Image (spheres, helix red, strand yellow):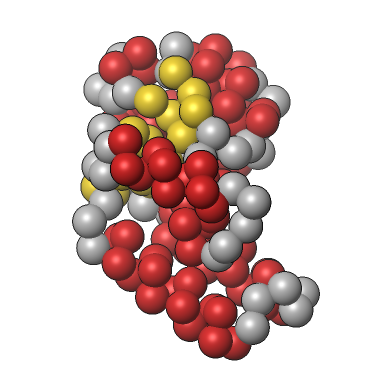
Length: 141
């Protein structure tokens, strides 16, 4: 079981240079744990690519179809006080943006406050460093 940050999920939705690595991670362990806000962050990333002309309307429809398929099987850490408390603590300790702190907080909650028990899959260098400092084994997606 691995915690997946949005930056590692998006290559599963939209073909990129990171897609093969992300697929390989899923093949290692198909159990994906994500934060409640990951869905919205994924849609935001895809919509930005569409607005920039890097994703066609058809490509957006395909990406959303892939997102639905992934979400049918992933484990979602709900928004809640425990995640908020861990995110607040992370913001005081690491140079993170709010959404990244929420991702890290959700991962800590998902790992039952034992980060070494779960891999953290991310393509965000700053978040990867913070997760490693918290005790997660980090992997690119």
